Length: 302
Image: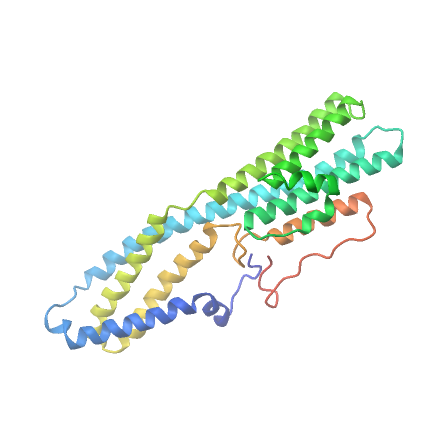
């Protein structure tokens, strides 16, 4: 996720240099095609530029609005996970009513550790990037059990439900406390399911395809139209028009899949690390990991 409000020209072109080159090549070819052959056959009406530009603006605006809605929903989901994770640790540490302080601390610690494993396993699944970091927060028995399942985060939640039921059966937590902690477990499941829904729901490809096609058509028509009035300058102006529309569209495309490993996607590394720090501090652990540092001279966090 970008954390700067301003970008330098070099940073902008680092995201758009491929389409910039294609635009310059396209405008150059169209210009020479127009002055050598097409100019003597047809004149492009100026009104075409205004009509096409307006239509494309609607397409790009719709795509970007829907893409941002997906990104913002993902941010709300993981913001909820942050709060629910803190409540999970606090409830386990405060509601546990065992007379054995060591046993209380050990059981609560194991369930909080298991929750950290859930978060890191979910992050790995959403990003399709194999990551065994969550292994350190599971016992060998738990690790062997969850690795038999296809959905590892869901398998971890099942282990949490099993141990929570044991706490209720032994009277360690009363009925009201059980319901409250179980409600947090349900919220974890809901957040996982909502994240998986966003990831598995493909943004309608026809919107992306036709928007790209219309932008290129607009660039070609604009370059041909301007070639008859401003000559070779139409190459530069054609690139400029295309740069505006393509950059705006690329910005929306970058938000369509908020869980990708991308500078413009959700900062899952930073979010999970912050939760990890909060929960380990709640447990009184002596070794606390450092927060995730920004990359590219403070431009973005992952």
